[in-house]
Length: 138
Image 1: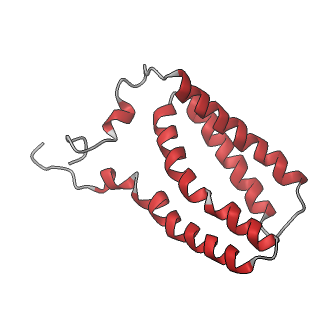
Image 2 (image 1 turned 120 degrees about the vertical axis):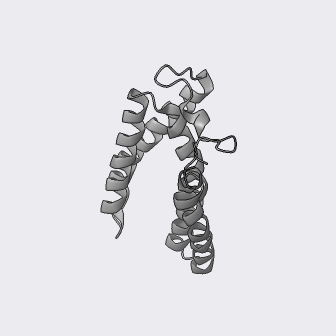
């Protein structure tokens, strides 16, 4: 049941809108905002590839989401999303790097790992509590 004792996501909203965030959580969040903002400029100065425009759009949207979620005090849910999605993001840059260096087999391997990690981290982990049916007797 959504909001029941087995729903860990209720802790993400406890005390909203007056939430206390530790210094380490704020530092992590602001470093993520700085990283994604810097990636806009890094992508612009790197040699352009077939996915450069998509990467710029991705970095613009991600920077906007991280920054506005900080402004609107959504740091807890934002941190949960960033940590969850960072796992799959380890493999894609490695796959691209190996491919650009000419190590096609390693690039394919890391892209397969990215594909395997991408689905559960994007569609499953945070969606599971919301996908449980609501209790009709509540």
